[in-house]
Amino acid sequence: MREIVLDTETTGLSPDNGDRIVEIGCVELINHVPTNNTYQVYLNPEKDMDPGAEKVHGLTNEFLLDKPKFIEIADSFLDFIGDSNLIAHNADFDINFLNSELVRAKKDKINNDRVVDTLKIARSKFPGARNSLDALCKRFFVDNSNRSLHGALLDSELLAEVYLELVGGKEPDLELSTNTIKKDNKSQNRTPNVFARKNKLKSRITDIDEKNHRDFLASLPKESLWLKNT
Image 1 (tube, one colour):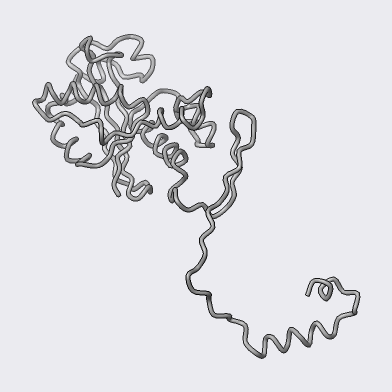
Image 2 (cartoon, rainbow, N blue to C red; image 1 turned 135 degrees about the vertical axis):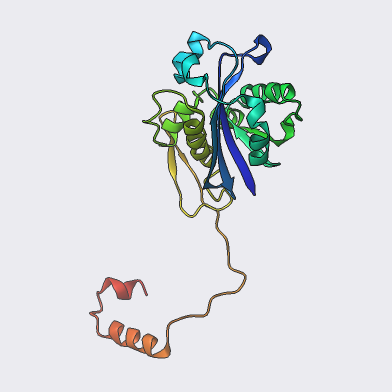
């Protein structure tokens, strides 16, 4: 199962107001395990940066001036994501911007039925709690100390870790130990799934092992705790 965790940085808050994408970052997951396969590109938005947006991600008009336009990288981006499900935090924001760019480049839009919104998952799991990416990193002990500014690839890498926690870890259907996580200063226990073997394993204890064990027990004092528990 291939999934793509993605994030974008933009010139402002809305493509309807003419805002554009200035960075795309993607991280590949295979069977809920991050691979080393990533995609990252800075883009020339062909418009001036909103000062508020610049404070968020630190990308300036001057830095982006010689970067490719979205239409120049549209095919490589679409090749990377393929037909995989897309994971994003507050996904409507990123997908609306991407679809606006894709329409401008005369490419097919991304269908919402292949998009997973981690913000919606977090809100369903932790209603009433803060569910920003930073808050979720703190809740799941994901190290985000390098996140002084937003960056699409860095945020995708952090989100990949958060997503795996939200769905139960790298193997969401199999938890091998009982974990306790803090939820709004309260403890929430996770009960592990227990799987019974269809066929009982053959004992590795030999007849000699059993005889030696019986001889050892016979040598113990009658008040021994071992004898009381046998």
